[in-house]
Length: 129
Image (tube, rainbow, N blue to C red):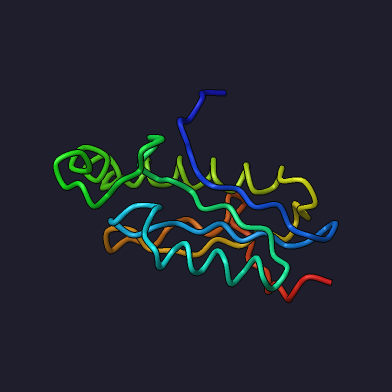
């Protein structure tokens, strides 16, 4: 299995077997305050959260247009977008306290919907028990 470079901020759920939400950022990158606000709201409601950096770099600064040009171009390729999305979902499933069967993904990047499931299954997820 090939290694996919992926960075992000992981927040384990407070309860055992809780759902986890993977947040994908906009072209602004994972440090976007809107994405961070979503993560805080979800954590306050008991969800685990993984804010995935689709740029594949520890810096993840989409506000720097010169730096972000290459990763933005790479993510126009649906294969790269799917590959990073699947890696993020795999990380979310392994968070301490996560229920690996209750993973949701939310986000849009560059007018493309991000992958919502690495298995192609869709289930309604309720608040953590």
